[in-house]
Length: 332
Ligand SMILES: NC(=O)C1=CN([C@@H]2O[C@H](COP(=O)(O)OP(=O)(O)OC[C@H]3O[C@@H](n4cnc5c(N)ncnc54)[C@H](O)[C@@H]3O)[C@@H](O)[C@H]2O)C=CC1
Ligand SMILES: O=C(O)CCC(=O)C(=O)O
Image 1 (tube, rainbow, N blue to C red):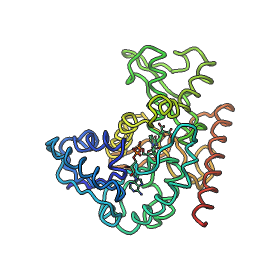
Image 2: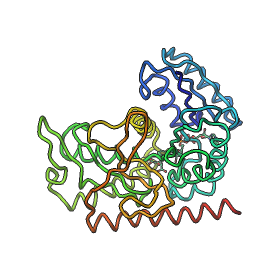
Image 3: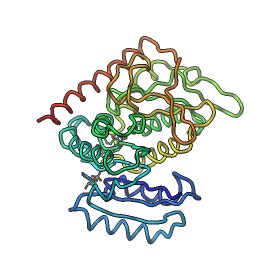
Image 4: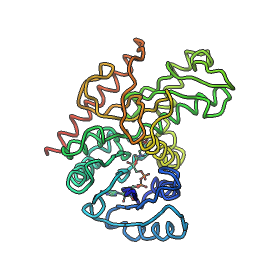
C-alpha cells in the first residue's frame, strides 16, 4: 500500500533537503510509493507551491502524489508518518529552550490534530526545537495514540559523535558503531562512547581502546558534539539543515525497517521509568533496537560509570525543568 507521509515546515530549510530524499525513495525504499503531505503556515503558501513544482520537476518514480496545505485537518488526515519540523529555529545567542514559548503551542495543536485525524498507528518524529519537550507536548495532546509512537530526533547528535570519532581514528564513518546519545537534544546531552566499537577490516575493537585518550573522550569530544548546533549557527547564520535532513532520513529509515543485528541507534523516547534509573514522564534519548515494522526496545544491561551517571542525571534534570516551563505556558 501507499505510505502517506507528512512533513511540517515544508517551506523551510530542512524540508528543502528532506522532501527530496523521501520522494526519491532514500527512506522507505525505491519500491514503496509515497504520498507526500506538506504543511506550512498560510504566509508561506506561495513558497510551498514553488517546492511542489520542484518536486514535480524531479520526475521521481516513487512519488505518487503531493498534497500541499496550510490546514492541520487536511495535513494530518490518515497519515502513516508525521515528521514535525515546522517551528521557529534558534538564532545566535539563544539556547534551544528559549524557543519553548514560541513553539509549544504549535506542538499542542499538532498533537490534537494527530489525535483526531491521523491513523492510530501513525509514527511521529519531532524535530522542531526544543525537540524532546515539543515531543512530550504532542504526545500529551494525543492520548489516543500509543506513547511509543512518539520519538524525537537525536540522530544528528549521534551522527556528529560518530563522525568525530571516525575522524580522530582516521577511519571511514561506517566503521564506527554503537555511539549513544543520552537525554536532551541540547548542550546537556551526553554523547557516550563507552560501549561503541570500531571495525577495521575483520577486527572489531572498542572505541575507548583505539582512541587511547580519555581526556579527549571525556572533555573536548563531548563539548564539541554538545555545541555543534551552535557552531553551525555561528558559521552559517542559519541552523543545520542538510545534516538535519540526513539524520531525519536515518532515523525514519531505521524506525521503518529496523536496526541490524546487535547494532543500536539512539532516539528520544517516552521514559516509562524502567530504563537506567531515568524517571518517568519525559522524552529522553536512549539506545534502542528496532524490529522491522517499528517496535523498539531500549537496550538494557549496559554498565554505567559514575561519570556517565552524573551526565545522564544532569540532562534528565534539564528535561524536567523544560517540562515544568512547558506546563506553565500551556496553562497560561
Ligand atoms: N532535533 C534536531 O536535531 C534539529 C532540529 N532543528 C529544528 O528544526 C526546526 C526547523 O528548522 P529549519 O527548517 O531550519 O527552519 P526554517 O525556519 O527554515 O523552517 C521552518 C518552517 O516551519 C514553518 N512553520 C512555522 N510554524 C508552523 C506551523 N505551525 N505549522 C507548519 N509549519 C510551520 C515556517 O513557516 C518555516 O517555513 C527548528 O525548530 C530547528 O531548531 C534543526 C536542526 C536539527
Ligand atoms: O542548535 C540549534 O538550535 C540548531 C538546530 C539544531 O538543533 C542542531 O543543529 O542540532
